Image 1 (cartoon, rainbow, N blue to C red):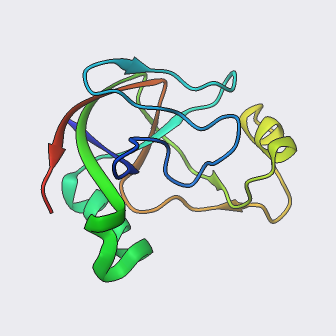
Image 2: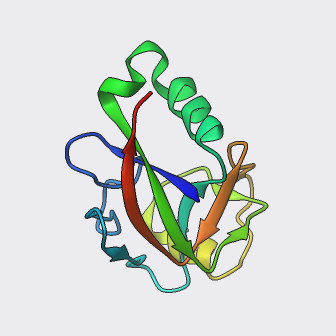
Length: 123
């Protein structure tokens, strides 16, 4: 079992707010819109909670939802993009390195090819 953080209420991608954002529906498989890109998930509920609270402190459970999920093509990733410009997203996911624009993902982050939300977790 894996865990996915989404925006509370809308069940959309957390962070990404442009044409590549994803709309999640419980029980349905969702795939990235950008070819060769991946969806970020967490390996444990504890790591997902830790990330949510790091981002939003005491209001995390009012802003973000955490769902248990199934995932396909799961892999660990060494880096994540630290900027959110469309042209950088294309370059990053094609495997080219960006000078100064990559960060270490949060603890427990995994990348996957598809996600299906299962159940909302209480935290």
